[in-house]
Length: 203
Length: 203
DNA sequence: GCAATTACCTACCGTTCGGTAAGTTTATGG
DNA sequence: CCATAAACTTACCGAACGGTAGGTAATTGC
Image 1 (cartoon, protein in one colour):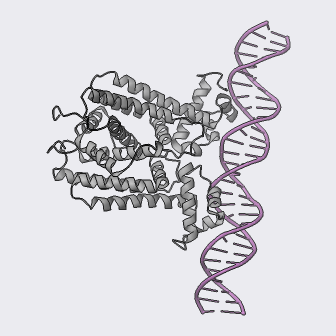
Image 2 (cartoon, rainbow over the protein chains, first blue to last red):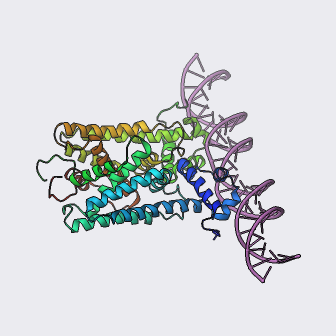
Image 3 (tube, rainbow over the protein chains, first blue to last red):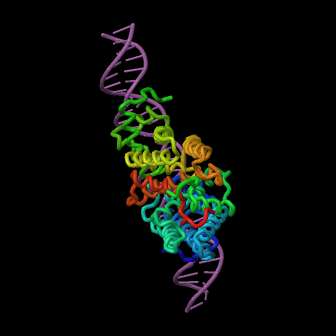
C-alpha cells in the first residue's frame, strides 16, 4: 500500500483537486496531469499517496457514500414517526448537497455511469445498496407499525421515496432554480405520503 | 456538413457500433478506433459521415430523446384521465427500455453527466426540459380538471412522478431483478396517486 | 555522524488518442 | 471513353495520456 500518511496535507490537496476535476469532467476525461497541476504538485507525488488514478477516484466516492449514510442514520434517529424520519433525511441530504455539490455530482454520476466508464475494481454497488436498504428498512418498519399502507410493498414505497429524492437532487444539479430547503423537504414528504390524487374514492 | 447520405448502410453500421461503445464505456472512454473496428470500417469512413466524435454522439442522444418524446405523446393520447395517461407513459417507456437498453443508458448517463464530460456543443438540456414539460403539462391539466390535489404545485407532482419513473428505470439498469411490466406500471402510478400513508387523517 | 526512510522532484517512457493527407475503387453522366 | 464525384482505404500526424525510473532534499533512528 502507498498510504504512509493517512491525512497528510499533500494528500488532502490532491483529493481536493481531484474532486474538482472528476466532478467537472468525469472520470475518464479528467487528466492526472491537470489534477496535480491544480494541486501545485507533481505526478509522482500523487502516485506516492495513491495506488493509481482509480484509487484516487475510489477514495472520493467511498467517502461520499459513507458520509451520506452516516447523515441519514443520524437524521432518522431524531424521530420516531416515518414522516419525521423522511423529512429529516431529506433536509440533511439537501443541506449536505449544498455544501458538497461536486462530491454529490460525482456520487450520482457514478451511480448512473456506463459499466466500462469507471475503473474495474470500483465496488460502489454495495454502498449504494446499503444506503437504499437503510431507507427501505425505515419504510418497512413504518409499514409494520401501521403508519404506511399495506397494499404496497415496502420496496415499492422505498423506490418511490428514493426516486423523489433523486429527482430533486439531480434536477437541482442541472437546473439551479430548484430550491432545496427544509420547507420543500416537508412538502415532498407530504406528497409522497398523501399521494397526488384528489380524494374521491380511496382506490 | 458531411452528411451526404442520411440513411446509408455504412452510417447505420457506424451508429450501431457507436451505440454499443458509448453505452458500455461512456463518451470520453469510448475510442473512435474501437468503434470503427467494431463496424468493420476505417476512421475516415466515420469522419466522412460525421463531423467528429461529438457529432456521432449527438446523433445518438437526440434520437433517443426524440423517440421517448414521441412515444410518451402517443401513449398519453390513448387516455383522457391522468391515471391512464401516466400508466400508458410508464408502460411504453418500460417497453422501449427493454428494447433499447443501451440507448436509454446513454440517455440517462448524459442527463447526469459532469458538465465537462460531454462535448461542448451538445445541447441536450432543452430536449430533457421538453420531455419533462410534457409530463408537467399533463399533470397540470389533470389538476385543473380536479383529478389531482390542489395543495401541491403541478411542478412538484411532476417531479414526483418523473422521479418515480427515473428511479425504476435507473435501478433496472443497475439491478436487473427489478421487473418493468404493465402490472408494475399500474402499481407505480397507484402509489403516486394514492400516497404511501395509511389513511388516518387527510393531512 | 551516518544510514535509512519519507516525500517529493525532473525527465521521460510506451501507448493511445482524435483527426487528416493522400491515394484507390466504384458508380454516374455526358 | 473519359471526367467527376462519392465512398471509402492505408498510413500517418502531433498531442496527450497514465505511469515510472532515478535523483534529491529533509527528517528520523541509532
